[in-house]
Length: 385
Image (cartoon, rainbow, N blue to C red):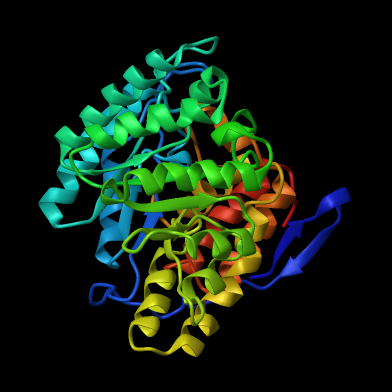
């Protein structure tokens, strides 16, 4: 059946959906790279809530999606930006998510790392001592659950810090206190405008110097860094300056194939939101890399970049809408509803293009189901077929 997909300006274009998915199977654990997928949460569509209400989560569907990722050999990065931290999911919901997902990971033998931040603090002026205490509270929840900690960038610290020394002090205290090596997360302002000037400077070179100072002071407590600046060369330069034994996890959803493939001076591991919809395909690509076949790895992953760049287009922070939309089309959840009502954050033409690109890649396990759901969405919006 031909679908008529809307584009900007109201015009439609014909599209012939695939009839068969890409053939992918679960397989052996990944060996050459550590690969995390930052995972989305599934909202409870029957909850009587408003965009300002605490998140109502469908726990069964949310945990089932994590089992899907683990089954393909991926790790799960939990309670991160992709799970709508600070955009619908508050700290109470995130704490419950961490506890439930960590228990599920233990039950199935899945790898998990969880976001630790300060989002229990209300907006406003804070002292660095208050920020540190908030981090400590969340770090305790993460460690008690048995998960690895990811120290996320803090909006509150961005306000409270008066100089780079304040970042050195807060992070130094947390790293000394952590029971196990953590991942440090540098999230750029394209993902969260409130993080402009993180590490004490709007100059990225100066900010990088402070970031590296934190790591150099406690290399035994830093498993790795997760960089989400959408600047491939800056990430390459940064990973070449890391102490031995400290990993670089790319968070660059625009340039991930080349960064994961690496060069003769090193490579990046991965912690990516785009690996939520790309999970099985990404795992298959890394298995090719495990055998030393970089060409086959790039042949599988390079064609996905157009979809990723589409989902993460400006305003980048709304990429979560496309991620959940594709999970619905793929049959991982029964509805296209998001916590905070964020399903309304992208236009119908944007979603239609996301469907077209994902279908072209063969990402949908049941193309007929995806086609049927896309047709229903178009009908609701008045697009005749």
